[in-house]
Amino acid sequence: MKRIPRSGYGLFQLLVVLAVIAILIGLLLPAVQQVRMAAARAQSSNNLKQIALAMHNYAAANNELPAGVNDKQFSALFHLLPYIEQDNLYKSVDKSKDCDSKDNAKARKTRVKTFDSPLDPLVETLSAGGTNYFAMVGSDVSLAKNNGAFFRDSKSTLVGSFPDGTSNTVVFVELLRGDLGKKALTAERQHVRLKAADLNNLTKDSGVKDFKASKNIAANRGSAWIDGRFLQAITNGTRGMAEPKPDVDCGGEGGFAAIRGYSFGTVIALGDGSVRVINPTLSLTTWQNACNASDGNVLGADW
Image 1: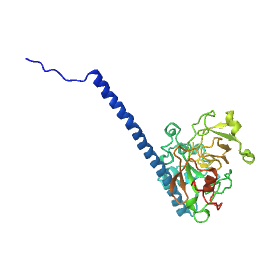
Image 2 (image 1 turned 90 degrees about the vertical axis):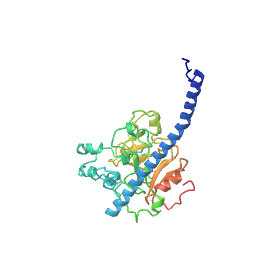
Image 3 (image 1 turned 90 degrees about the horizontal axis):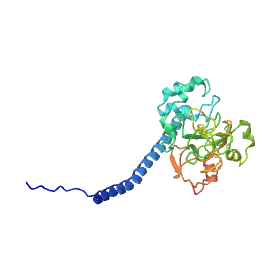
Image 4 (image 1 turned 30 degrees about the horizontal axis):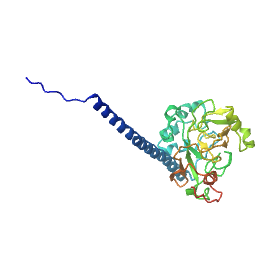
């Protein structure tokens, strides 16, 4: 019986097929990454949209916005919980005690997905209970009194507290969270922590020498959505986009903060409830004007 020869790939042909497959994978990966990035940006914008909408619903129910931080150190985000379908979590908190009381430890460590940005690559590896979305106190350093929508014991209203217009005023901004490290590696993830008394003596270079010497380093930005102290769930517009100088926290009562965002820009929410991405080349002047609700300045062309 005559044998029929089998057809098959030779070594050269096999190598060609593998090379073609490798090229196709190489071509597809960037497309997949772009799709994932687009989805993450859309989810981040949706998170901020929910927070901004919750702010409006809170204002409708209470005739004012929540305080940026109150006497028990609770944040504006905490007070918005019932308006993002987290009423049970809100009710589980003992509001007569400080936000970091042991009786509120369980709630403090609860992950709220709306407060996590899918754009931040460290989110899933950090402890639960954090946030990437920060209430905006204004363009000055102190939480005690400022010119934005949220500050200590603030009672802002959508009608009277935005002379510049709600569509021209930043109310929430997305920032990278701290990596909980102990050494100064990058201003994107670490900052300098000073005493509350140092707030009155800040200069434009405060924190720079400490950061270079890896002294007084903290890396807990955004580690507690429930906490309204500075750089926990509230920030200000005192330093610009990707500022090389470190953020400075003065005992939770204020300090310096930059926009710690992404290469494509930073996602923000405005007082009218709209969400947009600001350009990474945005000037400090324009940024501070946008964080100030009542300076009367026209936003720059880079806005």
